[in-house]
Image (cartoon, rainbow, N blue to C red):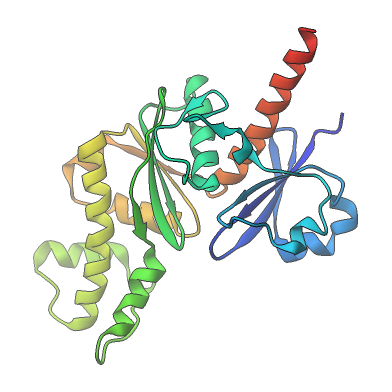
Length: 263
């Protein structure tokens, strides 16, 4: 049996395909690049996480073996992971949580753990050894920046162009004293406050940052002066959803083989 698996993370802004050999990620491709290589890739299983209800025709027409993990999400259970959330839970959140849940089962990850997927929107998901317990949804950095365009004579800020360490140091000495600094400080404090409150409420041992802005959220987290932050470790796993999709496929196949062996 060929061990190659393709994974598709179809988000609000981007679509990427992961190519796995066994459990090792070989490369990440844009959907456009994968379509250029479709003759070499089309016969491999494609495990899909999508924020959309219907797959774009460009996927269904080019990949013949697509797999939807959400079919295994039923009765508040996803495979062997209990899910304390309604059936509206996005497949990206479901798969990311499943990967961390399995890491906990192998004692490779501390519990509880908070997943912060920072993309167009930022989702928080609390995962423990007892399953997935949900979490809030926030506007992401780009949406926060864009909202200032609705104000009269305001401009769209760019938090990533500001030195986060410098901005943090300035806030320690005094409140912001011009409009540009005030807008940047507002976004920074919004993100920092969300993370700080999540830590105080749910007491995670570790935070996993992922998504397009995961690195920036971790930098904001690390620059926080809040004492509660210092007891919590953090890590950036940029391709967490892809690893969740890969893990799902391997777990499903192992269950199927175990069932066949029992016949």
